[in-house]
Amino acid sequence: MNFKVRAARKEDCKEISRMIMELAVYEKMADQVKTSHEELERDGFSPNPFYECLIAEVPDEHKTKDGYTVVGYALYFYTYSTWKGRSVYMEDLYVMPDFRGKGIGKGLMAKVAQVGVEKQCVRLQLSVLEWNKPSLDFYIAKGAEDLTAKEGWHFLRFDGQTLDTLAKEAPKD
Image (cartoon, rainbow, N blue to C red; front, side, top):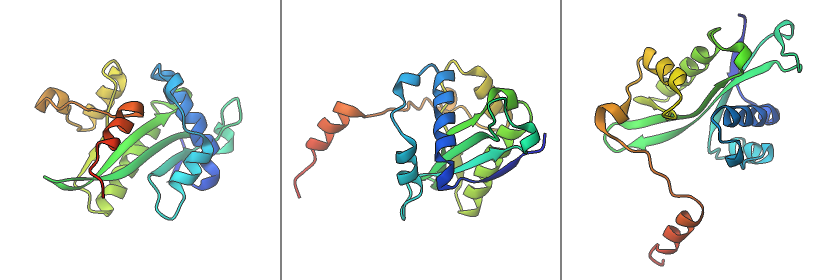
């Protein structure tokens, strides 16, 4: 299928927001989505953006029954490994169901990898839900290593009240 991958623009944030919700529904976590397209605009298109995003577009003749030509996205940001150096973390990779298996997901992920390599990143990292075997198999088939299985790493999070409580324990300036 003919498609194009390009850097997202501020005006794409409503489409990105729509697909974030579609991904959350697929991951059975729709109730956890709290970001709005306005927050995506602020956080991704300010002078110091928190993330970068690529979108996949198809020509009008392949648009969805609802009229969408933006059919996938990859949202990523940069991190730093004290052991390895510059890294890129892919937060989301999503392609609408009717467009899967057509090379769009691979194209988005390869473009994130290309951007990372151009910025001298030494690795691309991501997380996959344990039950999401199709995605896990996809990433492993492309050469990703399952660090949970290989090295025993756990992915941890502080949020909400636990983040606030921890922040209040910071030494005073």
